[in-house]
Length: 179
Image (cartoon, rainbow, N blue to C red):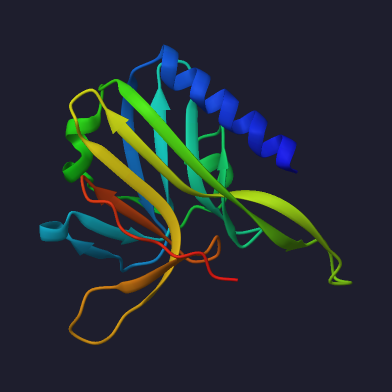
């Protein structure tokens, strides 16, 4: 499965080198999400869609696999149910139609359950995508688990493909590898 990760990453890198990003869309599956505009930080549970001139990549929740997956598809092709909403993502609108100058993808290996026998196999899954733009803006997108206490913002982030999606604008969040 590492070959799939390498192929997807090479495909993504080739697209960003030849196309400007047309639009970023965020999607929410449940009613509530966290937004901390002063910290330029949002935590959502549906996914993100990166639309380029000739194709679209999404890091989205896949209900069949109960994990986030990164594919060369639209959000609604990965999240195949109709109970989602597109979020008003005005905080990232200034990234639309900007050239991406650098992209870093972080993959981790996970034991994925194959069937009812609980047989597993190792698969590489995208856990973080960092994009830098010609405008000197940056966005960090990561699948995370975090600690949240009453009247505080999230803390102690760790990568988790079955968690939620962290979106940080011009503000890199430290994320731990657990396991």
